[in-house]
Picture (spheres, rainbow, N blue to C red):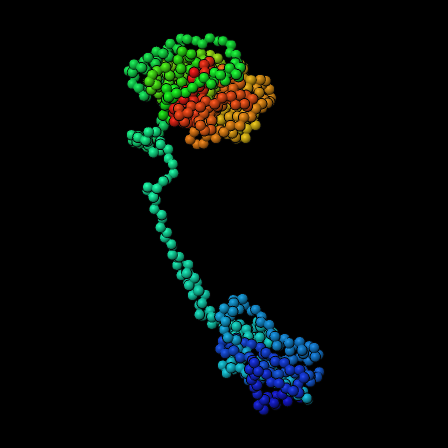
Length: 629
């Protein structure tokens, strides 16, 4: 009955529309509970309208809720049914209708709707609640353009949402149409093109003008050598330009004996002939083997204080940095030998005046000469060892450099005599190997090639009394070996000293008894060990703080013993004014050789005469400084 009466009312023109603006409402005095009900909204893309109608549940009774047909003409599926339920359930249904939730159908469609910010239009269906007491009619007016699109069931893509209400189906249809509309506008492609144009536009670079250098302004201090002026301020003559081949290339010296020809003099020079005759006379003299006794520290200091330097005892002997030095043991003449960075060996006879006449420069090697020794058996023999893999003996009585040992595949670092007659030698290599060389054997090969337990060997030194023992200085370890127990395979040392924390420069036995060992390390310490008993361990006696950081351009310091006073050590110094220092084995300072204006550079390599108080020091420019009584 209620359904037929609703249809009759619908046919009789019950389609009445009550429009209420957003900010207006109609007040009904006979209704106890009145509310403004916002209707469902639909995106149409034109004009936003929200319709509100008064609604009351005060006179509601169970069973009186009618289910009217939709007032829309073209589709009967737009009816919204109200289930019979309790009063609380109806209130919940009304609350759901008042605040509908927007379901996220597609993330792409909703993001497009949010960015577009289109106007929102409200559409609502007309609800009728008929009861004997009163009737509340809810209706919504839609646009005339919407009336022709009320058939949602024919919309493609909505078949999967058949369980949804007609309103929700209409809403999804509108969302889909709006998304297609914005996709047809191609906004994303336009935004991408605009972003690309912005990225291509480079910011204008601010070109700052560099401040002009003041030509006459006071700059940093520069040495006279860099300014190419002498100490008096007179400009030095321009040096002849050298080609790149002359500077870079270092050709090997051909094998075999070399004629002793000085580079700074002619072969027919009378002075050079007299120099060779002097060496021939020195070869006939032999130093008597006398027992050497240590003098007291007091008398030793007195003799050191008497040693002075002058302009006549300072001379340039080599063209490059001095890397090794030796003083001839003769007591009649003072002869100093110096090995240089570029393979030269220079000799200086201090008895000649002017001093330049006593300097003779030879080229027996092509790379740095790291070790020089006068033969203990023949004073006229000078043995030199170089990085180029050659060991030569300069025989000044015959004016020739003989080749003792040659191995171009390896680089030599140091050598020493295993026997007193200088017939057998031990040679250290930079790759950690060692060679036993016998000069009595014909040829230039070694007797035995030995592999040590060190990765590198810097210095080799033989014990002065027990000559079967020798000490080697590696990178951070110092090993003592027994020459009688060497084999070609890897050898284990008798003793290993591991107290050093940085790179080691040298290690030497004391010259008379061999009871002490002095080492020079890059950790600014000189260490002295007690080697009086060659056992499994050698104790550390003294540690002397001394600056050994010479830098890149200076030859590294090597502390050596005084042959006359084996409890004193000689070493160069970085202190100002420039000096050469002597320390006692207890760590106490003994003496400093100061030269004033005559000693203005660092003497890295030093050597002391074995019997006389004569000290020679070489710097990194090839200059030799001699202190003597």
